Image (tube, rainbow, N blue to C red; front, side, top):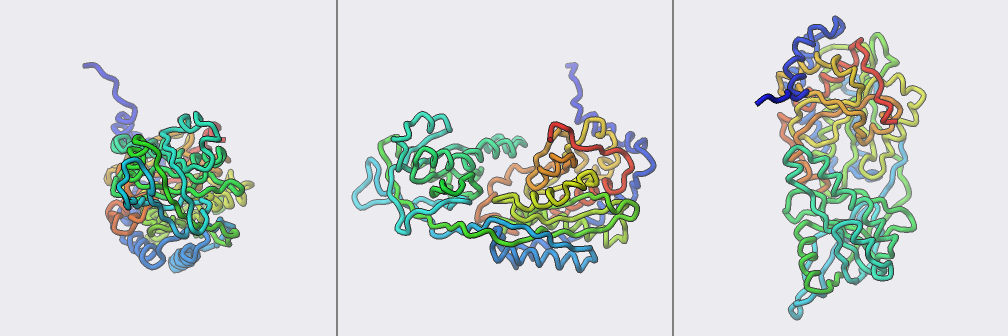
Length: 475
């Protein structure tokens, strides 16, 4: 059969020859040294153990978040990096009691109730201290809710029973699967509030049915903060089945609080450039995590991979032409205030930011790099592909916009964004749950993340080839 060869296959087959023609500014020996040093280092894994086991959960405004700032800053100072703590005002939301019981349904035996496993969503409002009791309306998409009259929703609990498509995730499209389901976690509670609901529930946004709820942010705002929670996959299915038999009544207690904004910081650590110190290449992850676990995959692994970049370059005694800047962002999870504070403070210097890399997709094995660069610039990355190919990470993918969490505003200002191409097929089993802990991180995969980030940062900080700005479609 005569078939066209996919461009990605052609790129992989041809990059070695292109690498030698890319220009004399690329030091392939230095790239290999950096890659190998990161692959032989346990620094990132040790720092991750410190962050998760000693500090623990790091929700913005918490004591854990404050301790993490100091821990990471001190570790960077020990390496000899120039450390800056950039002030950021962050939301301070705390969860309280959270429990639910089915107290009425068709066919219920006398004296029997059923416990529902759930967890409050970020930004949730509170029920009365004694809880509330209301009928549950089950919907499977936004249109089903819109079909109700507001009078029929008023005072009820709305459950969005929308599945996470694990098959899609298994086929390499975990981000797409997440995007489809998480829309209901974000906008569902607000829509229910606007229709007069007493509370809103969403089916956990994740792939593993182990009766574990997944928390996360909502779009609820002051004046419309109804109680909102994620229920486990199993409990969402149970309620959906029971609702087919007749009305279902739940007693729900959620007592979170939204406190005044708190003071926090982005941690910034620089290795100044030797020739162009005013030009910056960012490597980063976000330091905050949800409060249910220790945020090992989301995003302790990303932060410590970025820390390893500084460690590797310092250990090898190298100095980049441009400044390499490690940033541990604060408040990615429930506000994005850290990324916004940095972008606003550097808006006048956006042209001096050559590239920004964030690792925030879990610690699954990385296969290469994705970038928001123009099509004409792709060929210049052949030397980087050649350097990463020996560790199975030679894939290079281009998109007009990545929209990566903390980098989205920088990208909008023309700064090319970079992130690893990751196997995230099981990432959403643990994402935003009590199971996101240190033991879930494979140390070899973490070394690969650090090696990919370090080699990419070194390449970007030293190449004289035109990387270009992010495509105009991102702005």
